[in-house]
Amino acid sequence: MGAKVITITSGKGGVGKTTTTANLSIALARLGKRVVAIDADIGLRNLDIVMGLENRIVYDLVDVVEGRCRLPQAMIRHKQFPNLYLIAAAQTRDKTAVSPSDMVALTRKLRPEHDFILIDSPAGIERGFRNAVAPADEVLIVTNPEVSAVRDADRIIGLLEAFNRGPGQLIINRIKPEMVRRGEMLSAKDVTDILSIRIIGIVPEDETVIPSSNSGVPVTMSENSRAGQAFMNIARRLTGENVPFMQLDATGNLFQRIARLFGGNNSET
Amino acid sequence: MSGFFDRLRGRDRGSKNKAKERLQFILVHDRISLPPEQLAQMKREILEVISKYVSIDEEHVDIALQPRDRTSNKLIAEIPFKRRAHPEEVDEAAQGEILDVIDEDEEETVRVDPSRINEIEKQMDVDEGKQDEQPAQDPTKPSKTTD
Image (tube, rainbow over all chains, first blue to last red; front, side, top):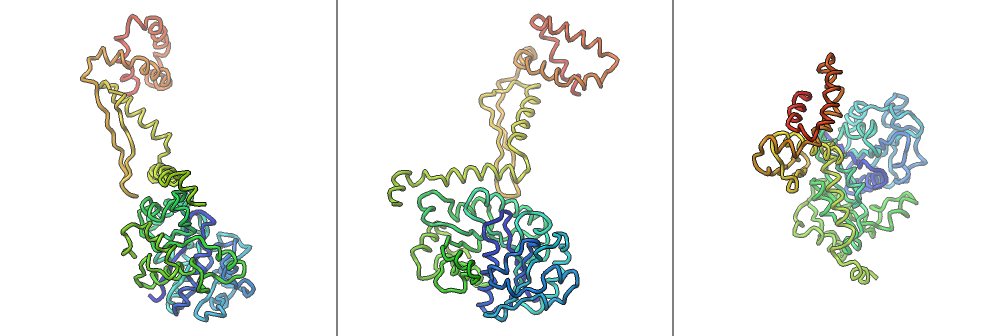
């Protein structure tokens, strides 16, 4: 069987799917895992930029699927983490160039040589989403603590169940503990109660995220980013490690607050 | 600064509760693909059917979707009756609505018995004129036309 295929999706755009995929890929690579990140957002290539690999792309996902290159030619190796590869999305081609069975076939070829294959799903619930979800062993649903994002997450969870890929696990991204404390933002507990699915990570809003994607160096690569630490913890959980939500690190104040939002529920992974 | 806002808004009174309420409402409908307007229509129809047979205590009717979890939502209906009604009472209570039903379903009436169209129209004219004097005739009509 080999690698585990993990698809990152959300329904709504702009909630942080690509940032999450980039950071989890790097975090898993830092943990010594052999990782392939695949950008399934055909026509709107982005993952390469967030990972800082945009200048090195020669062949992309559609080239592989249509047989214009061999698979290894489309796998861009990260310089700093030689056990991490990216397969970029095509920038200009027809979205229907790739089918769900193409994705299953592609991941089947990649599985034996790797530990994790992460697929960055496009927004929406169309073909691209179905492509991204088709080969998934596990689906991570990224959402923000906002009504529209949570609603879309719920829709995605319903679809995953219909496709037999459910229920998936939740990542709540861009939470602002200070606003939660003031009662002006849904807490992580509110969101998980409403969606009633398992949560695998809470990522705080962090001003280091945008500069890091500006420079193509995901936050997980630096030690002093809270969001980076949150992503690292999610990566650990993906490898089967039991990482409690509250016991995250030395910036205790913030995470204690997040933990408090979970009430007595801290032992949950 | 945040302390100021805390005092200003009170801790439980932030917009998050609004968000939660709206979400819960939206998701119940999303999950069964039944928009609020259709639910309201369904309620009206349920009550219409029931009130053909019994008199409903409309002030205490409570029909609502109850979300349990993603896969098992249910409709909980509490529809108290006034008491077992005599036919004349049903008739009085529902007269207006029943006449409406006849008007809306004119096509169906025609389809059921096209040859009698003129006769029916005449009869309806007569009914309209005599409405107040002859209410006892009306309740039999809707069951004929809708069956």
